[in-house]
Length: 264
Image (cartoon, rainbow, N blue to C red):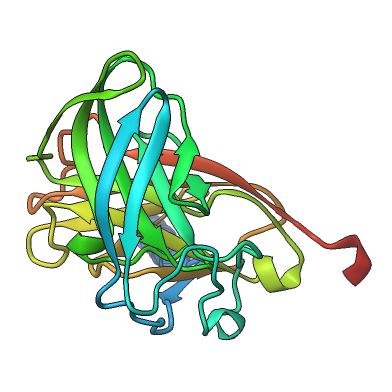
């Protein structure tokens, strides 16, 4: 025979066990939530850069598969080293300042002279060209860029139109970075057209699956990425937090970090 007292004791014990299990689950859930807030990768604003306030792309011609740019500016010169390059602590081009040419969602081409050959297939494309510092940071002024929808026919620009929709062009990171000086801090840079970051738009940077939200149109340092292949996806988000509908959105790029054998 089981006494009422025994049954009552069992009920109290079961209730206590259930409460303890619920508390454990709550603690585990809180711990998981805390872990999710800890980021593997650190993103910080790029240090202020040499300003080229009057740097300008005066003209863009494309005929016979050859570009001819007009570039002007009091201090900006293609092929020159940007004065603060050594202080930037990130990858820098030994060839100096250059033009970044981006067609659609393709990786940019770095061009160190105003005239160069470049093949673009026939059809309509989103095209961006901007003047870059030697460490690949874009000069973010309208005068220093050319952003258009271009219709290409027979290796020439047949017509152009303004880009009307909010658009993000991916620039850096790209390619292969070698050595501690180039891999400790990797610059993240992008170019925006018709999109002011802040209240209306944001950029989501997905770094190897870890999401970071950016609300200022500036370059950033990424720290903490592993050696080997890495992946960054940039997505332009609207006020509703959803991706902006555009053939240019999102953009994903894979790049590689490598240790310098001489440093080991």
